[in-house]
Length: 124
Image (cartoon, rainbow, N blue to C red):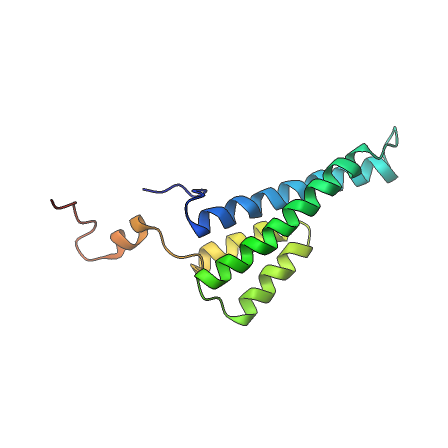
């Protein structure tokens, strides 16, 4: 059984980076709040999360390219992934859709449960 965020799989790496991209977006939005509206006004949040989000954004795009190649995404799916990288928290929305549409592959347990007779035991 593999974990949802198993970095040994393309889907696991994509899920992990997509979640990190969303978290960095939230940090950047909070930083922007304190820069422009908060009390006291400070730029430290934008400086820290701006760089962090920039790096994670690049990682998300690269990971999406690798996932798209591995799972042979259609052109529309590629465009949705790129759009998701721009929209705040779009990576999580894309990830939820991708899991429901099963474009990130199926886990071994999911395919075993679908087979008639259920999972097959390991044979020597």
